[in-house]
Length: 186
Ligand SMILES: [Zn+2]
Image (tube, rainbow, N blue to C red; front, side, top):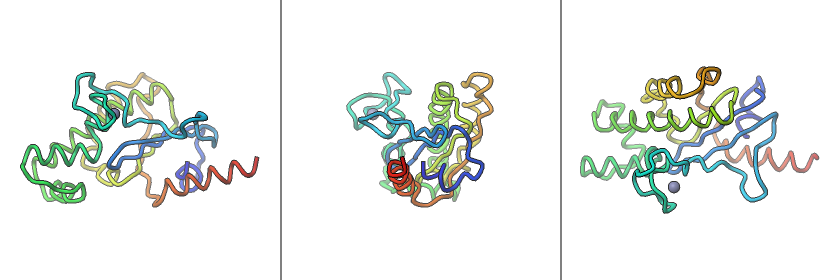
């Protein structure tokens, strides 16, 4: 919502926002309105099941997107595979320095995010997908595999949905303020 209001000057009709951080969340803005129910304002994208028998998730389920591509999963996998406990920022640095393990994990993350975004795009048919959150800065490391999965899995008109990375800082905060403003002006 923050991205839609403050960043996207063309004001597309529909935007799927995906926040990639320790956890994964998102929102769908349609004609300037955030899709929401009385109970929840965001899409629990992080708990969309991608692998039915996948790793245990913090929510009690298995194979959620977050358990395969969230920041906490990335840190867990890196430590399991190398014996080193690093933060997401450190793993990113390693990947940029050519660490094969770190690069592999980002590729894996991109693969799962591509599957998830292809499914979401099939359902919501957004004009554009906007990635935000700390991990979106690592997009160049996994953009190819992510886009390949979208092309492979999305239905024909949806295949070409563009994905961009938000450069807006504090997008969530701005989104919240945009929502309040919208509520007050109706
Ligand atoms: Zn979960």
